[in-house]
Length: 107
Image (cartoon, rainbow, N blue to C red; front, top):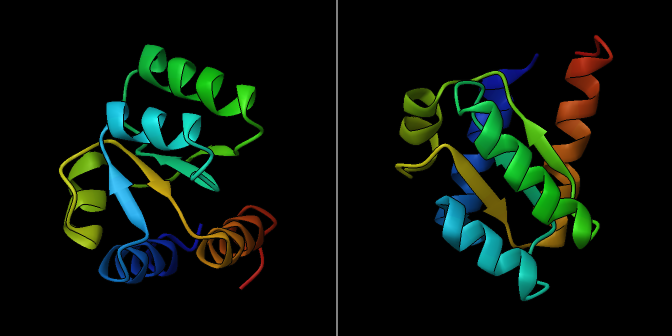
């Protein structure tokens, strides 16, 4: 997985004010219709990811677990949380493209 590129894009997204972290805030953005993508660290609990995925699916928002732990994700994008939400459609599309390329073995 192109984890470095994904984390870098998440950091850019955060600096642009289009990334928020924390389970409650992520769910709030989903319910408000302001979420385009949710991302979860690989070391969050299965229960937390299941709950996140449930909320995201209700509003047709992708929920993806990335190959980075909470600490790495936090350092890359300046959030102390295991889940994050992208609130900009352009950033979400760019991140999804990177994630798809990485899972398909692209460079």
